[in-house]
Length: 168
Image 1: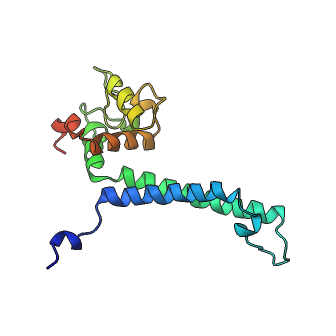
Image 2: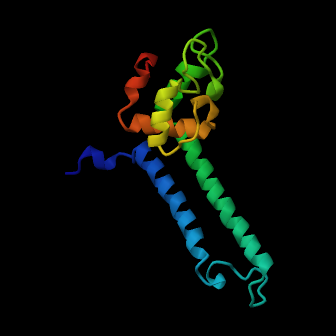
Image 3: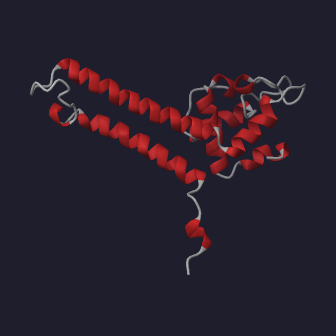
């Protein structure tokens, strides 16, 4: 008898991990294609039996577009994570005096908390480095997709308690 777990859809975390692996694989493929003979990664679009520079340029644009699309899709999937959506709704997207409206650019007037997830500056600096996104002194200075990635890293590593009061 099969357990009910075998019939469940893959978890959101596993799907995101799969999308990230697919994007990384595509980037690796592009990087390794530079070491392959051009005929192996560039189609002969005009059928003349030779690969011309315009054909190489065309295929390069196709590959760049594919990678860009994969990265954007992965960023949007992270942004739509149910827990992150809930936290943003409670911390920075609602109207009214509190929480502070402003979305990804939100700034708490009575503390250093900023951004969509209201990270205090010291927490932001520590977690963003561990998540692989250093370089932003304050959460609100980071692009939306970096704030999402850092928040998801914190959630995936046991940091949900940071938003215990949100009801999420």
